[in-house]
Length: 204
Image (cartoon, rainbow, N blue to C red; front, side, top):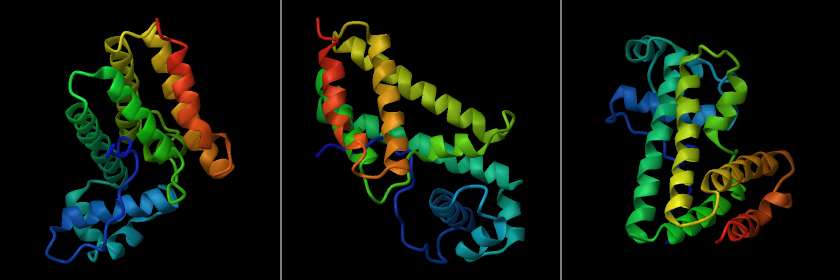
């Protein structure tokens, strides 16, 4: 089974039991609240309550809410390595199949009715301050994703791999936004077909 597209949103998790360390409980609670309600809308009081702890404990593990936001996004970004490793393991030495698997997984992600788009892209919209500690996490992750696509397109022997990577990257970013702004009947439902057509146009 093709894995879900890179973890650019938190997976649903049950309320963590008290045996889980406080720092982990805080991150789990913050991840769900930030993704579902938005970073600006969620205060540290709500996070502490959801984590079954208090503000003093939260600030003992995170210097500020901004630091917690950065760690939330850093953790999501780090999980993408698991996604790509699974694709490589399922399609060893076959970059074209890996690219096709990415297209399929990306299509499922963009059309998931339970999703709220990409957590990192959502955060980029909310966090306008260029010096916010989370901005670097977001920018590095997005650049790395685009660059990985470019390498995959080149390894697959497709023409103009840099251009193709840009087209696929923008297609996915747009599909996620379209899904949120219009709904499941929006053009995002044709993401896979459009992606396959774009790839076909770059065949030698």
